[in-house]
Picture 1 (cartoon, rainbow, N blue to C red):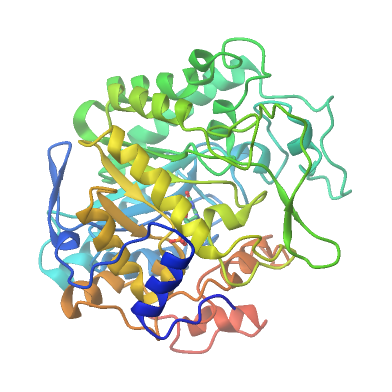
Picture 2 (picture 1 turned 180 degrees about the vertical axis):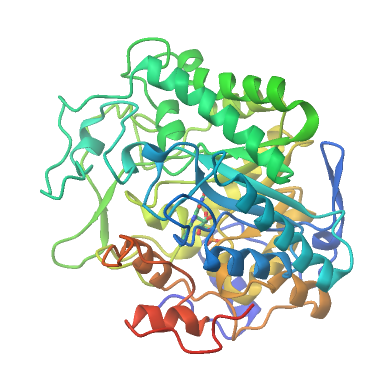
Length: 476
Ligand SMILES: Cc1cc2nc3c(=O)[nH]c(=O)nc-3n(C[C@H](O)[C@H](O)[C@H](O)COP(=O)(O)O)c2cc1C
């Protein structure tokens, strides 16, 4: 157990002992300030990260639980709702219950936006300063039907299951996505963005993080042809998509992207201690984006900063900075107390992970002071995360602070923070990984369990224990 602090002073003391630069501010002022993003005003500096509930209908439209989650987010008070991973094509879905936007589901997405906005208006009277977006994705090597690789990388291939139930992994003969496939996929992203505009979303995020296809392309130094090798080639996919959306949707949509600025390398559990250890990789390690080839346990932000420059030039007005890959090195992306099932004990104090998030995000913000940069990695700080958000915003280290796990535990965290000046310790996320456990469960009639917050939401506690959800726990 890492989180044992009885007061903010104790936490600050520990941070100082570890020589970390996480700063808190008690009085919440900066988080309340509106901010202009591409001509739109966002009413406060608090956001909700994309959080998949794995609860879509088989055709990709939002299901009952998707509506429930989004309504809760809408009524929660955060002014930036960054809608979750939504596939642009069926073969790119990460699981059979991932959202998928297409002509047949666009009406349901419209309803999702309407209900989210209505929930916000019902609580706050007005929604003109609320931004609701959708994350568009292709799951690449994590596509559930069969892995679709951007590149061959021996370290990653050795851990990528073929998805045929045999437990075999992909080998060097496994096909990579062809150039024509990627060209067609660019069009799918553009079509999906146009549909998202039709559905009433304010922005679309072209997802380039967590090891999914567009993120893997950024690291595809070994790939031959127009999408691999040079930095110019590796950024072709995202440039083409952004250009395509700009010409198809004009200024109907704000452009956004969530980027892993540091991929790192896979970790595995030590056979005796179960503590995470990095897998041995040959040096220089060339298969990670933002990853120092000579010391892949450390970041190298040279290319990520060049990427952000391209994004800004291509019209992106919101960049959400994230790290790592949940399948290879979950402690990097989501600092935690307890690993999810089959995972490893954190190899570092979670504060080190929080500090890494804040530090790398601050580096991006420093290079692009005018850009709306959204920060990640707050949830482990529990009730004090909001004061770290205040600390970072005041110091110009981030524009908007958002919660991921913290938001499914406590969807109305922003309302409490802004109304009472603090968060309730009995509602915050405990970072104990049950949401990820549920996400990995496939023994469900639809091939995928829905997920949510097990400790804080009785509906999911029942699902976790294999019981039918209790009556009355399903309401808004
Ligand atoms: C259950 C679950 C679902 C998630 N879904 C998404 C997603 O759809 N898209 C995405 O970019 N990140 C997703 N994430 C990552 C979170 O958005 C966030 O980056 C991560 O939890 C770290 O932030 P936190 O410390 O505030 O939780 C998910 C994480 C969890 C645990």
